[in-house]
Image 1 (cartoon, rainbow, N blue to C red):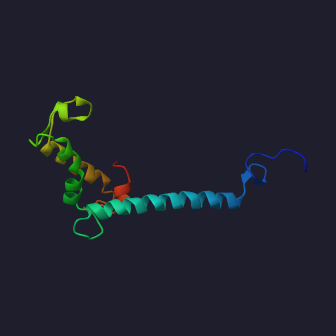
Image 2: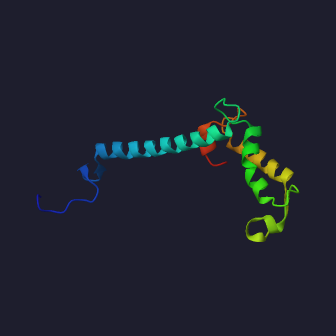
Image 3: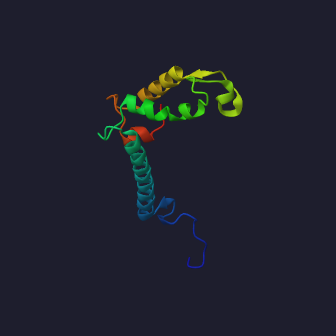
Length: 126
């Protein structure tokens, strides 16, 4: 069947993808995951104030609080409705914000060792 149209998915046998294509797809997926961890590794390095290669809850909360501090224009430790995105919402205290961050840290700490590594930092909280 030299002139016949082939299936849009190259195969060695009808209905089965070529092994080389499966390998290429797997390598692309793996390289994408590695690239994500490398970018997260850069982020981890910025958060890791003591340079031990992992993020403590205190480091996480301190780093992630920067947005609150920038939004708190009057510096009173409370994000008023006017300071919140869209100018709406219930006021949020710095204490409440830090508590939420600590809870998120605990959800991201997949192996429950009390630290976040690059992979845990890259994963969304459960």
